[in-house]
Length: 195
Image (cartoon, rainbow, N blue to C red; front, side):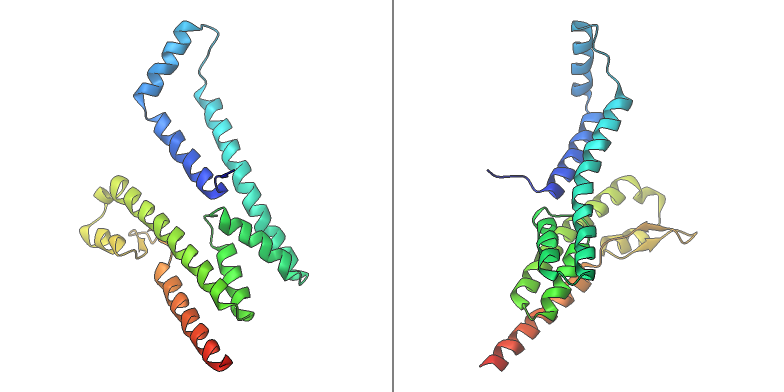
């Protein structure tokens, strides 16, 4: 059975819901259903609540794993903490915590292949998120800001408005790449020392 990762499911449901809310065909189908079945009453507020409840359930599972992982680390039960963090990596969790913790744990243990695997996954996921954020910013906000800020956003740098509020905040993927390169170097040094 090919189970959809929770992170992807969360993202897909959010995207589908937004598309549905702005889709005139979907609205026509609702009206058609209403006229065919007068008992049917579309309730957009309830649909939004239900949608948000579904998303919250998915997010709660992944956040709960992180919190349990933190507790297990405090109790020095690192093996079980790793299992929980790895589940979130498998589910493509859209937060940095499990990736950061696993990278640190694997570095301390000199498990460089695992650290490299986690960092590559982290880079892959957060590059996509940055692209999505940039696309959204350019589509919805860019007309309100000067060209120099738009160019800064395109280079994935944080930008603030004139009041100092963050208006575009990408993940620092370049820092993740530097850490990946360092892990590769350490892996090479460790391999050389073992010879």
